[in-house]
Image (tube, rainbow, N blue to C red; front, side, top):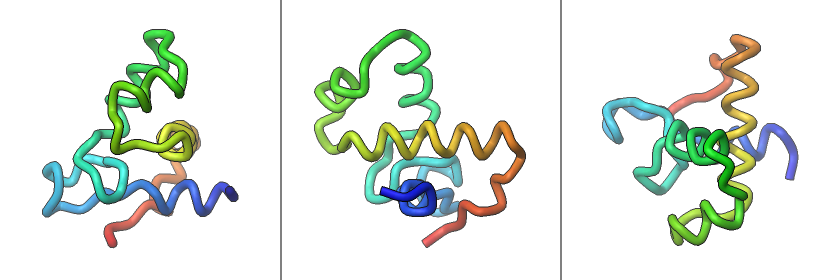
Length: 79
């Protein structure tokens, strides 16, 4: 899956989760996934804990975090 495809899995829609970035089609915040990774959980453990997620969603959260760190967040848009 390309970087662009991963970023397409993240949504920041003001009508969903108050505009906070979340995985498209869910109400799972990107920050929840990034915090779980920082706490040492593996992608598999995160998916086990949040069954609506797929491994690609965990990668999408990491890609989003990288874009944010590069200040390229303008690429993420609402549906």
